[in-house]
Length: 410
Image (cartoon, rainbow, N blue to C red):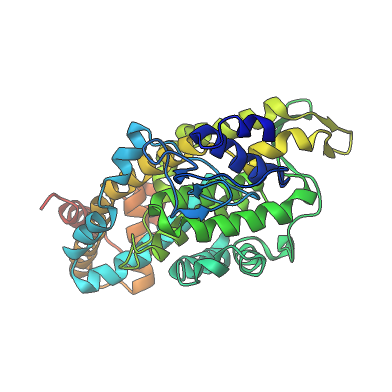
C-alpha cells in the first residue's frame, strides 16, 4: 500500500487511499506523510459532509459525518437536495403563527398526545394512561439536553425506562443477542433482522454519540434521520427501540430549532399513514444485513450470529441515503397535515361550545359525548345513546346538528 501511494504521492487518490486506510484499519503505514494541496475526503458535491478537519499527514480535509467507530454516508440525490433546500422551520412557524395563543397551547398538548399514541400504535401497542403521560413528558423535554449528553447511556436508559412497562426497564445496554422476527403458524420463527451482537454495542453506541456531535454542522434532517435510524438498527435495548428511534427524530428537530416553538410534529402519525413505506426504509438496511449474516437458531429461540466480523462494517459505515430520503418525505407529510390538525381543534372547540349551549353537560360527560360523536362521524349510535339516558331524543338531534355545524367548513 505504501509503495503504491509513493508512486503518485501528490495525487488525489493516493491521499484518499492513505487517509482511509489508516482511518478504517487503525494501522499506520510505514511512510512519511504526503505534501501538496489539501483535498476533501468526500466530494461535497456528491455527499452530505460535515465541517472539515485538516489531516496534515495525508493532506486530506476530513469531512466525514462520524468517526472510525461509526461514520455513515448520505448521498446528495435529487430527493435529498430538494429536502435540504426547504425552509422547514419557517414553514412550521408560519403555520403556528396563525393560531391564537389559547388554541396554540391546547394544540401543542394535542400534538404531543397524538405523536405519543401514534408511536405506540406503530408497535401495535396500547400504552395505558401512565406510560402515555410519561412519553408526552419526554416529548415536551425533547431537545433540551445538549447534544454531548443526548446519546449517553445514562440518558438513553432513562428514556427507555420512561416509555416501557416498568417490568422491562433496563439499566444498561442488552447483554443478549436479539433479533426482529415473527412467529408463523406452526410456531416457526421467521427472522427479519439479526441485531448488533452485545460485544459490539459499547463502541457502536459511542460512535453514534460522537457522530451526533460531529453532525451539528450538517442539516438537521440529515442528523435526525442518521441518529434515529442508526439507533434502531443497533437495537441497544431489549424493548423500546422503535419508540426511542422515533423520539430521536423529535429530539434532534427540537434541539436544532426546526420546531423552535415547541410543537411536536405529527411524525409518527405521518408514518402510520403509510406503514409500507416505513417498512421499506427499515428493510433497505435489514435486507443488506441479512444477506451477510450467518446464524444459528436453537429450540429455545436463542440466536447466535456466527460471522459478526462480516456484518460489522455495514453497521459502522452504512449508506443511510434511503433513510434520509424517507424522513424528508415523512416531514413533508407531517407539515402538510399540521394545518388540518389545528383546524380540527378549531372545529372541535366550536362544536363543543355549541353542544354546551344546548345542554350544559359536566366536563367529563361532555368529553365522553364528543368522543363517541367523533367515532360516529357526528352521529350517536343507538348503543352509545344508552349511555346518555338523561338526554331526550330532541336534544340528541340538536347535538348532532351542532356537531355537524361545528365541523362545517368556515
